[in-house]
Length: 439
Image (cartoon, rainbow, N blue to C red; front, side):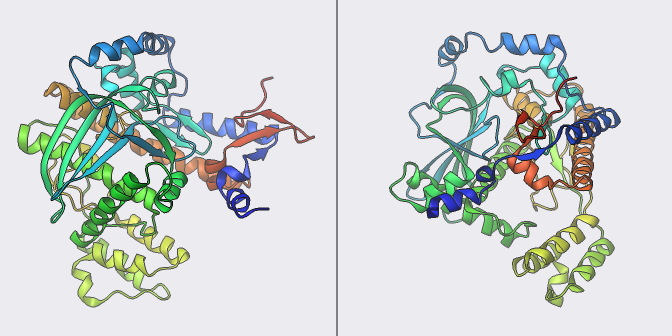
């Protein structure tokens, strides 16, 4: 076996899907349906929502051509997406340029509100759903895939409508020189997986090497600055591809909410994360210092986020999980509010909100509408509460389903990364989605 073959065999996609029998497939389906009922998760889309979604996929090329009159034409700008290998829709793309004293970073987000607006059936359904629910090898979408995975998705080699956040970032301070948010038409040159992104960074001969290297340089600086400023980094060993996407999306989200709060003075769906009480932090830090091989300097107890970051940097994988759990136990839940008061404690941002995932989060969809219309839905407070509640329900359902997988002898991580198939006694595939055969 060659080195490349061995490397591929060690990846999730190289190992192939997890195999289960028909009886176990039925158990999994019953568990999902039980969770759907308990948490009011809507699996199937109503016919009127699906028919509306299908209608919006017709005549797309002509519609985009007409939209060019009202949008910035960025189709000649080198642009690409980076997502997990199993991603079904691509709602964000990047472009970058280096200048003498600044970087120009473009984050292009799928312009979902061009298709899904408050008068549409899809909007009403998205409000009911609140977000996409990701269970291992089973996704319950917020928007109909017939729309989300086609005309909304920033697929390569096709013109697509986008909402672009163009940021001029100073090289010396990494602060904003300027922020411009506008509707655009883009043309993605390539769809990269995280693994492909890593390969592009390593090989100067491959396409997009220069662009990915440049955006990683910026993202790495942003990451280090966040840590220095006191942002909590619970997963310190992220690879370069994840660092690029995480930091660019954080910067874009920050830019949008900065624009809404300070330049326009409008309400929006802000992400607010309260801080733990001093007693709660004290409890967490004591639990962490009792772990083998972990020490926190007494001077760091006044800055608990930095203390945790330091402990995580030197922890092995087993200790890392225990530190993460100790912190998460005392962390209050983040929630959506129409006022950013209190800021986002874990990120250490005064103002923060979501904008970069309108295909899968109600909050982002609503903020897109607010940015474009420069107006606020009348029921914004109720929508904030709705988005917060639906997210909590989705996370609880996901956690309970993963627990169930472990109880029946399946590894949720493997199922999530490799997918699942149902096989018969002879090992032949009955269903490629792991669903039980129909009676």
